[in-house]
Length: 155
Image 1 (cartoon, one colour):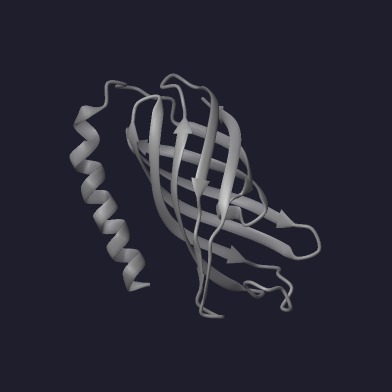
Image 2 (cartoon, rainbow, N blue to C red):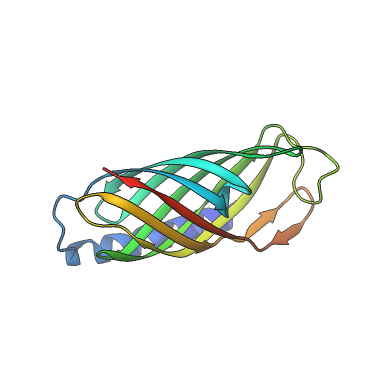
């Protein structure tokens, strides 16, 4: 948990340092997208709110047939204009999850991060994301590497 707080503080320092270079003064600030894999573990629908020109919070709901559900909560930082580098960290709650699954267990938290790229026009429209999303499962002391592909709309 201490590591997550340190990562978030470092991201916030980097985000405030890079905030002045954005040529889009009033970007579209809401994104809804579907993600295959990624922080939602399987298939998820997500809502993301841009709070500054380069910092957003994200909440989602995911499901994996026969295994369970997931709720990702992420803090993401963006660098770039239309083509953005995305860096993020957060938690994934597993409210309903089979205890015999190879990863995670019911009512547990996973630590997750994001390193990815997104195509997102400043004034809104179609958003496409591709990312690496490693997880750490503290209950089982396991790391798991995953990736995600997303498509959605920004408005």
